[in-house]
Image (tube, rainbow, N blue to C red; front, side, top):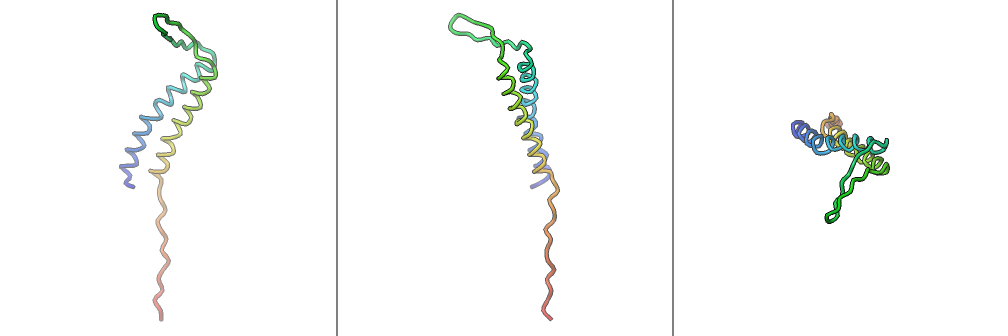
Length: 94
């Protein structure tokens, strides 16, 4: 694989996975610690404001770890130095 393609894939996965992962991480930490993260729900003409439960915060943290790990793995796989193939010397018959 071309090195330019590897850099492009790594940047693409950072934008699509790591950036939302960081947002989920911040939201998860806030919800898990108990800081008020209001969520407004509307049913018909009635709306109510609730807080995210701590279990959702822990779920967001787990999801963020997975999303942040994806670009790391993609970058490692696409940008690593592949060892050169070692050919055994061909000895002509004498």
